[in-house]
Image (cartoon, rainbow, N blue to C red; front, side):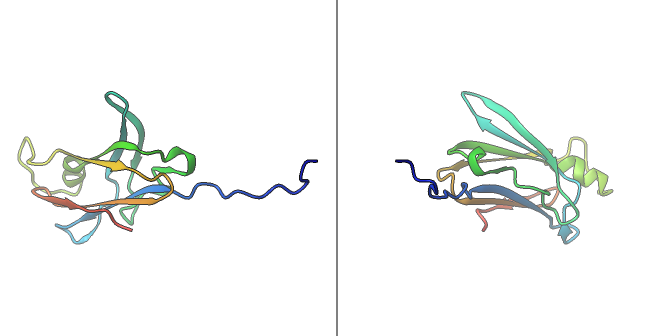
Length: 128
């Protein structure tokens, strides 16, 4: 006999998010272009987005069943952002696009990949 009330299974809760902070001006980097790639023998573009006024994306880059273990790359268009902000950059700029390569081992976890950036330096870490 079939159970008329099968157990409810929760949807996967894993997600990938990012946040960009402009360390020159001391505020979130609004309007920065971000691209997400996955490694499938070569890098394949899977999503493009632009940061909001808080330097974040309006939705996770990946979540639920879309967040699978593998190698990923986030590419931040730092040069275009700082030129848009009116920063006088040489041509070519020291930093153009900043690629961050990272691995996702657990598709149920939250992976937050922030970028703190200036035209001459950047840092990142696995946030919460």
